[in-house]
Image 1 (tube, rainbow, N blue to C red):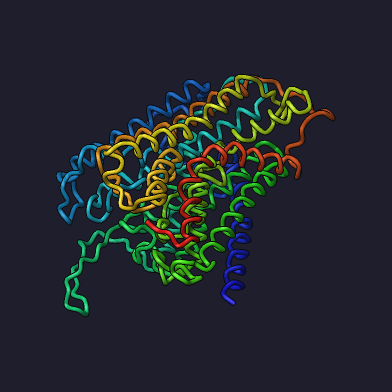
Image 2 (cartoon, rainbow, N blue to C red):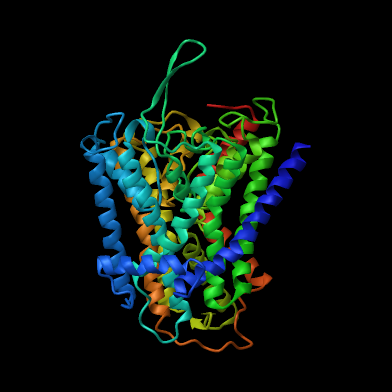
Length: 564
């Protein structure tokens, strides 16, 4: 009976996701085209006033190089602000717990993490960061890093859609519209709903209570709801509290759980239809969405079957270790797959406690390049890289210059696409290798054998993939991991953004060739099949050797009742 209930919940989840994604995607297209929408009567005035206040010429257009420079400067300034307020937080207001200043390397790692939309946390929020830093630092960056990803995607769309052009838009306008029309309204609405469910939103000091056993217990409080909403909608994932969305004050009810996991995928899924709308091809959007949804559902089914299969060591088919009894196995599995396909990183259960196969699915979702829905904006421009490779390979098969929406895909685009795909993969594998052969990398490991390797591999996978979720068990608040993971997060983010902008700059200059009988259709089942194959071959096989001695080996040994 529970299987049927879980299946019904999955169907409802997917149905609601699709039902909301299509209209939201159309709305986003209007926003970034500068067209009038239902928010325009109020928000257009706010937008214009903001431009006048900061002296932005909304009509000014940028080529890809200027756009990239403005983006990098903006992100650098955000990083510096976040870094500085951490190391001086003791002197700042809204610190009722009188928390000390954050250690320099931890502050560096955290600032890089939130600026790159990774939101990896080597700290416990309630015991490390003041309310001021959480709100002015983390929450603000949740908005801005998500807006940056959306802006890059919109730039890519303009590059594909524009004929014989030069300019890709205005970075400041794109970021402003992403925050004002997309992220703020949805976050405000979700915050109100979460508060109604019991998510805390207060400036009060932590409360000390006495348990039934007579033990003193500190109950943390804070302005959490306003951060939780944007952490999910912006695919950020950084928890206000240490145990993230497993903590009752972050995720108190089944309804809050359902809404939060839905909000993780909502904007990335909607942007697929924005993509199709702005390119004038709804069928192509549905093709991309179908591939994404298929991989997502495969991950959910495989993880669920693994978690409910008989375990030869524990002699049970219901693995509840590390899971919230309030939500059960299915909701834990659904969240673990959603958070890893969407570059979110929040968790409502401990991935390390899941079966090796479930851990493999979570890890592989990130290693595919965070393109299955992916981060806000970044997931779809990451998927574009695989689309380009698919179109190129298909062109080679028929002996024809590949085209995408009438734009010829040539050596320049392929080189940058391969670079953007390889950089995160290389950094993940190289840094994992460095960690497993060095004392500094092994010193904070809590598990041996293949599970220990999975902990290290997952940490760098999460950093290089800008996901932010943790396998747990590995203490990353060390100089070694703070520095290497900061480097991995930077390369994983900007090593993809800059090539995408370069490709956009190349495509925008090209003419749009009319479709002929030899043009590869990108809106049918055949293309979806080819794209799926390229994702698996290029994405998954890159990591197969290390996965085979990590979670795969652990699964085989567990069936032989061998543990470490």
